[in-house]
Length: 196
Image: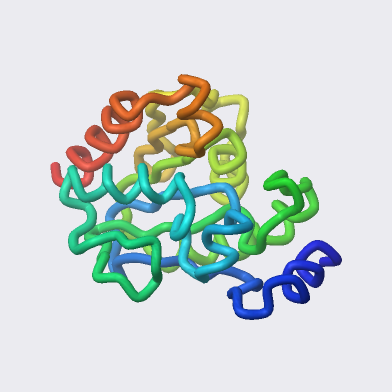
Protein backbone atom coordinates (compact mmCIF):
# COMPACT_ATOMS: atom_id res chain seq x y z
CA UNK A 1 0.00 0.00 0.00
CA UNK A 2 2.83 2.41 0.84
CA UNK A 3 4.40 1.71 -2.56
CA UNK A 4 1.16 2.62 -4.36
CA UNK A 5 0.72 5.77 -2.28
CA UNK A 6 4.25 6.80 -3.16
CA UNK A 7 3.52 6.24 -6.87
CA UNK A 8 0.31 8.29 -6.60
CA UNK A 9 2.25 11.19 -5.06
CA UNK A 10 5.06 10.93 -7.60
CA UNK A 11 2.84 10.42 -10.68
CA UNK A 12 -0.57 11.95 -9.90
CA UNK A 13 -1.73 11.79 -13.54
CA UNK A 14 -1.25 8.01 -13.75
CA UNK A 15 -3.96 5.39 -13.14
CA UNK A 16 -2.23 4.21 -9.91
CA UNK A 17 -4.97 1.81 -8.84
CA UNK A 18 -6.36 -1.67 -9.41
CA UNK A 19 -6.26 -2.47 -13.13
CA UNK A 20 -9.45 -4.12 -14.38
CA UNK A 21 -9.71 -7.02 -16.80
CA UNK A 22 -9.72 -6.04 -20.45
CA UNK A 23 -10.94 -7.67 -23.63
CA UNK A 24 -13.86 -9.47 -25.23
CA UNK A 25 -17.10 -9.67 -23.25
CA UNK A 26 -17.53 -13.37 -24.10
CA UNK A 27 -13.97 -14.68 -24.37
CA UNK A 28 -13.03 -18.19 -25.35
CA UNK A 29 -9.47 -17.57 -24.11
CA UNK A 30 -8.49 -16.13 -20.73
CA UNK A 31 -4.93 -14.81 -20.51
CA UNK A 32 -3.66 -14.72 -16.92
CA UNK A 33 -0.75 -12.35 -16.36
CA UNK A 34 1.27 -11.39 -13.32
CA UNK A 35 0.52 -7.81 -12.24
CA UNK A 36 0.39 -4.29 -13.70
CA UNK A 37 3.81 -2.93 -14.65
CA UNK A 38 4.81 0.30 -12.90
CA UNK A 39 5.18 2.33 -16.11
CA UNK A 40 2.78 0.18 -18.12
CA UNK A 41 -0.69 -0.73 -16.85
CA UNK A 42 -0.19 1.14 -13.57
CA UNK A 43 0.25 4.27 -15.69
CA UNK A 44 -2.37 3.58 -18.38
CA UNK A 45 -5.02 1.55 -16.54
CA UNK A 46 -5.14 -1.19 -19.21
CA UNK A 47 -3.32 -4.54 -18.89
CA UNK A 48 -0.03 -4.80 -20.80
CA UNK A 49 -0.38 -1.27 -22.14
CA UNK A 50 2.62 1.04 -22.13
CA UNK A 51 5.48 -1.40 -21.60
CA UNK A 52 7.53 -3.86 -23.63
CA UNK A 53 5.48 -6.90 -22.58
CA UNK A 54 2.46 -5.34 -24.28
CA UNK A 55 4.40 -4.74 -27.48
CA UNK A 56 5.10 -8.47 -27.83
CA UNK A 57 1.76 -9.68 -26.48
CA UNK A 58 -0.47 -7.51 -28.65
CA UNK A 59 1.58 -8.01 -31.84
CA UNK A 60 1.30 -11.76 -31.30
CA UNK A 61 -2.44 -11.63 -30.56
CA UNK A 62 -2.94 -9.64 -33.77
CA UNK A 63 -0.91 -12.17 -35.77
CA UNK A 64 -3.30 -14.94 -34.71
CA UNK A 65 -6.55 -12.98 -35.10
CA UNK A 66 -7.11 -12.49 -31.36
CA UNK A 67 -6.76 -8.70 -31.67
CA UNK A 68 -7.35 -6.09 -34.34
CA UNK A 69 -6.73 -2.38 -34.71
CA UNK A 70 -3.56 -0.53 -33.84
CA UNK A 71 -1.73 -0.90 -30.55
CA UNK A 72 -0.24 2.47 -29.64
CA UNK A 73 0.52 1.79 -25.95
CA UNK A 74 -2.44 4.00 -25.06
CA UNK A 75 -5.79 2.79 -23.70
CA UNK A 76 -7.51 5.08 -26.23
CA UNK A 77 -5.89 3.43 -29.26
CA UNK A 78 -7.94 1.39 -31.72
CA UNK A 79 -6.85 -2.02 -30.43
CA UNK A 80 -9.70 -4.47 -29.73
CA UNK A 81 -9.35 -8.02 -28.44
CA UNK A 82 -11.32 -10.83 -30.09
CA UNK A 83 -12.30 -14.00 -28.18
CA UNK A 84 -9.75 -13.00 -25.52
CA UNK A 85 -9.83 -11.47 -22.04
CA UNK A 86 -6.76 -10.44 -20.07
CA UNK A 87 -6.76 -10.67 -16.28
CA UNK A 88 -3.83 -10.30 -13.91
CA UNK A 89 -3.15 -12.46 -10.86
CA UNK A 90 -2.52 -9.25 -8.91
CA UNK A 91 -4.53 -6.14 -9.78
CA UNK A 92 -2.24 -3.43 -8.35
CA UNK A 93 1.40 -2.77 -9.12
CA UNK A 94 3.67 -4.53 -6.59
CA UNK A 95 7.06 -3.18 -5.47
CA UNK A 96 9.86 -4.35 -7.80
CA UNK A 97 7.20 -6.17 -9.84
CA UNK A 98 7.33 -9.01 -7.28
CA UNK A 99 3.97 -9.59 -5.59
CA UNK A 100 3.94 -11.18 -2.18
CA UNK A 101 2.00 -14.33 -1.39
CA UNK A 102 -0.47 -12.20 0.58
CA UNK A 103 -1.08 -9.91 -2.42
CA UNK A 104 -1.63 -12.88 -4.70
CA UNK A 105 -4.05 -14.49 -2.22
CA UNK A 106 -5.95 -11.22 -1.68
CA UNK A 107 -6.43 -10.67 -5.42
CA UNK A 108 -7.36 -14.29 -6.17
CA UNK A 109 -11.03 -13.50 -5.51
CA UNK A 110 -11.06 -11.38 -8.67
CA UNK A 111 -9.55 -14.18 -10.72
CA UNK A 112 -12.10 -16.64 -9.31
CA UNK A 113 -14.93 -14.24 -10.19
CA UNK A 114 -13.59 -13.80 -13.73
CA UNK A 115 -13.42 -17.55 -14.28
CA UNK A 116 -16.95 -18.08 -12.93
CA UNK A 117 -18.29 -15.25 -15.10
CA UNK A 118 -16.84 -16.83 -18.25
CA UNK A 119 -17.94 -20.47 -18.47
CA UNK A 120 -17.73 -20.24 -22.27
CA UNK A 121 -13.93 -19.85 -22.12
CA UNK A 122 -12.45 -23.05 -23.59
CA UNK A 123 -8.85 -22.32 -22.69
CA UNK A 124 -6.57 -20.36 -20.41
CA UNK A 125 -3.08 -19.09 -21.06
CA UNK A 126 -0.83 -18.54 -18.05
CA UNK A 127 2.00 -16.07 -18.53
CA UNK A 128 4.65 -17.19 -16.06
CA UNK A 129 4.67 -19.39 -13.00
CA UNK A 130 2.80 -16.95 -10.75
CA UNK A 131 -0.04 -16.71 -13.26
CA UNK A 132 -0.02 -20.50 -13.61
CA UNK A 133 -0.05 -21.19 -9.87
CA UNK A 134 -2.63 -18.51 -9.10
CA UNK A 135 -4.92 -19.83 -11.81
CA UNK A 136 -4.67 -23.39 -10.50
CA UNK A 137 -5.45 -22.20 -6.97
CA UNK A 138 -8.42 -20.20 -8.25
CA UNK A 139 -9.74 -23.34 -9.93
CA UNK A 140 -9.16 -25.49 -6.84
CA UNK A 141 -6.66 -27.66 -8.73
CA UNK A 142 -3.64 -29.35 -7.14
CA UNK A 143 -0.56 -27.50 -8.37
CA UNK A 144 1.58 -30.65 -8.23
CA UNK A 145 -0.66 -32.25 -10.86
CA UNK A 146 0.03 -29.51 -13.44
CA UNK A 147 3.72 -28.67 -13.61
CA UNK A 148 4.55 -25.28 -15.15
CA UNK A 149 6.76 -25.27 -18.21
CA UNK A 150 6.96 -23.09 -21.28
CA UNK A 151 4.89 -24.69 -24.02
CA UNK A 152 3.20 -27.16 -21.66
CA UNK A 153 -0.50 -27.89 -22.06
CA UNK A 154 -2.73 -29.35 -19.40
CA UNK A 155 -6.27 -30.71 -19.49
CA UNK A 156 -7.93 -29.29 -16.37
CA UNK A 157 -10.52 -31.08 -14.25
CA UNK A 158 -13.32 -28.94 -15.68
CA UNK A 159 -12.35 -29.99 -19.23
CA UNK A 160 -10.73 -26.71 -20.22
CA UNK A 161 -7.19 -26.54 -21.56
CA UNK A 162 -4.36 -24.63 -19.87
CA UNK A 163 -1.46 -23.39 -22.00
CA UNK A 164 1.75 -22.24 -20.28
CA UNK A 165 4.23 -19.64 -21.48
CA UNK A 166 7.12 -17.80 -19.95
CA UNK A 167 6.03 -14.24 -19.26
CA UNK A 168 6.55 -11.89 -22.22
CA UNK A 169 8.62 -9.46 -20.15
CA UNK A 170 11.61 -7.57 -21.49
CA UNK A 171 13.82 -9.49 -19.03
CA UNK A 172 12.78 -12.86 -20.48
CA UNK A 173 13.18 -11.73 -24.09
CA UNK A 174 16.47 -9.88 -23.52
CA UNK A 175 18.02 -12.93 -21.86
CA UNK A 176 16.77 -15.24 -24.61
CA UNK A 177 14.66 -17.26 -22.21
CA UNK A 178 11.66 -16.39 -24.40
CA UNK A 179 11.94 -15.72 -28.11
CA UNK A 180 9.23 -14.30 -30.34
CA UNK A 181 8.99 -17.69 -32.06
CA UNK A 182 8.52 -19.51 -28.74
CA UNK A 183 5.79 -17.08 -27.72
CA UNK A 184 4.05 -17.27 -31.09
CA UNK A 185 4.05 -21.07 -30.89
CA UNK A 186 2.07 -21.05 -27.63
CA UNK A 187 -0.34 -18.28 -28.67
CA UNK A 188 -0.87 -19.96 -32.04
CA UNK A 189 -1.73 -23.29 -30.42
CA UNK A 190 -4.12 -21.61 -27.95
CA UNK A 191 -5.80 -19.69 -30.80
CA UNK A 192 -6.23 -22.86 -32.86
CA UNK A 193 -7.63 -24.75 -29.88
CA UNK A 194 -10.39 -22.25 -29.09
CA UNK A 195 -11.50 -22.34 -32.74
CA UNK A 196 -11.83 -26.13 -32.92
